[in-house]
View 1 (cartoon, rainbow, N blue to C red):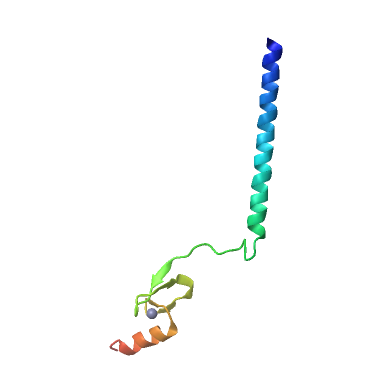
View 2 (cartoon, protein in one colour; view 1 turned 60 degrees about the horizontal axis):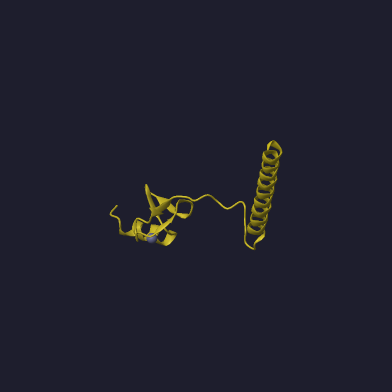
Length: 88
Ligand SMILES: [Zn+2]
């Protein structure tokens, strides 16, 4: 009886090992496929905050906006327009 239990235990461990090995191989293949696709860039920038333009309200990434007088603008043109419309 103990031989049968040991055999079942051995089969269980072999199946578990093969299952984990197959999953690991599948995972590695999926990661390699993902990383080798055209356009994949591992140095993609992290998401950044968006800020609204004080002139038109369009949201642009914070790194691309124009700062002027504690306000943010989507473009140089809108920053200049806002300056012309503000009273001095
Ligand atoms: Zn704007």
